[in-house]
Image 1: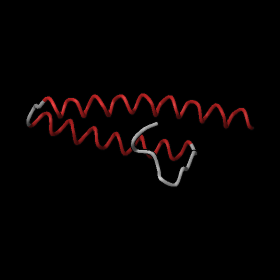
Image 2: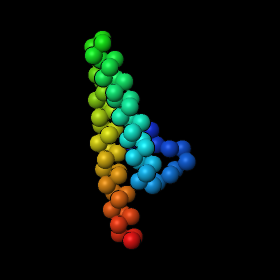
Image 3: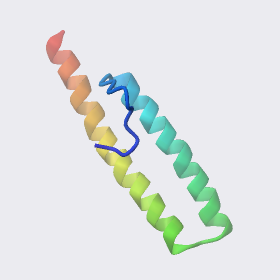
Length: 71
């Protein structure tokens, strides 16, 4: 699971979407930082954010399927 998960253990799709938004904002900040001063460690952070976004996409899909199955 992502390092950005909520401590309250909210398992709703809305919480996952909020986490995706926070990560997207971090990614924008890292983009700006890298554009201004390209560094390997900044690129590593960008890659880590992208990996976490992929994990969150899969998590969101699973949560939405689970909700559909319960409906």
